[in-house]
Length: 131
Image (cartoon, rainbow, N blue to C red; front, side, top):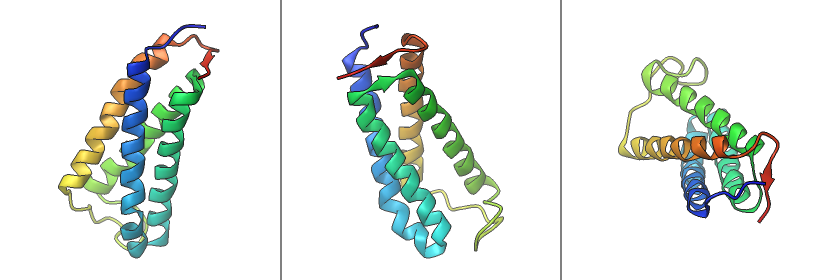
């Protein structure tokens, strides 16, 4: 099993935690627009926080790949929401207003992706790391 640099793991965990906390923070506001929007934010926030914890206690290639795929999917949804608008819900087809908090949250998520990509390449295909 290969040893992973702790600073990279800590950075990825911190970025995932920050992203998750932002999602949890905006979930109530999005629930006011539509129940589904709020639940989406809640699920994404909890998933990000779970990933942050797992980066510290059980880092695995599968976790890294799943987190990368999920982050790319969420970024794609947000790209649509802020360019053409989501295709469903009370504001279907209306692009969201781009606010500073959104820019910061997307910068954090892009930073997370940049932190994860080197980690996934450093782990053997079937390797995992315990504590």
